Each structure stands twice: as C-alpha cells, then as structure tokens.
Image (tube, rainbow, N blue to C red; front, side):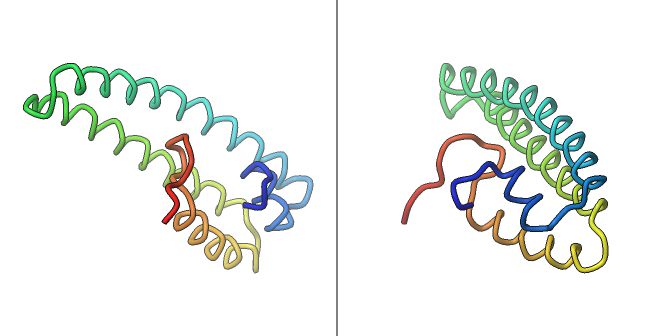
Length: 115
C-alpha cells in the first residue's frame, strides 16, 4: 500500500473529509483493540495446538475458531468503514477493499508471502 500505514492510505484514497476522518479514527481504534484481544486468543490456541500436535482435534478447532473470529471482526470493520463513505466513495471503497483483500493477510500480522 505504498509504504504508508493502512489507515492513512484508506483515508487518503477515499478522500475523507474531516468528519469522516474523525469517525474513521474511532472505527480504527475499536478494531485495533478488538483484534489485539483476538490475536492473544490465536497465540494461546497456537501454543496449545503445537504442544499437542495435529491429532488434538480440540486444539485445532480452537485455533480455527480464533482465526474465524478475526475474519468476522475484519468483515465488520470494513462494513463500518463503508458506512461512513458518501456517494462515489462507496464504489471507490469497494474497489479498494478488493485490492486490500487480494494483497494482504489483513489482521494476521507479518508479511504477505511472495510468489
């Protein structure tokens, strides 16, 4: 995303006005707080899974559920961002979202694997 933080990139690409920027800040902060909690769950689930191994179906289920929670949170986060968009910004957001989804492992930390 051009080397800038995703938050700044999105706000710039969608040309948010001052009111939208303020709402966006609140949305981003909420998402950061909630995703941090889920990432702690993922870390705990990974530790259990790697301790017990792939034969422990409950550890795998716990890990899968934690990742699922993160994906649901991300979906809701993007839906909330879209809700502050006006007019043509909605279409621009939809196009930007497709690029974000295709080009990152959003919310997962780390870097995207290179082909």
